[in-house]
Length: 111
Image (cartoon, rainbow, N blue to C red; front, top):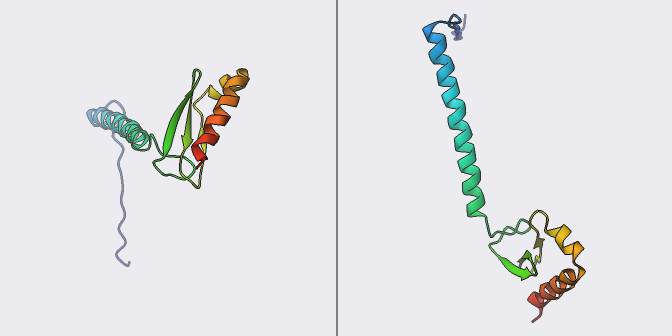
């Protein structure tokens, strides 16, 4: 034999004290991992709140058009428009907002 190691894990008997603590520890680990993932996601969202999803720069400007807030990337080489959930429906519903948003967007790039 070339010195291979073999690991054997013996499962505790169901209903035993060991099984209870093993299950409790697993439950705690799942909760901790879930909480860590949620905190990580929240932290990431906060750190990248005003970053453009397209170019990644910290260059979003928020423009109010009626009851819709449009985020526009003011990076010279990008110009991406960011809409929150439901804002596109609101813009389409009110064509005057669409026209005003277009004019406002284009005014950002006028020199």
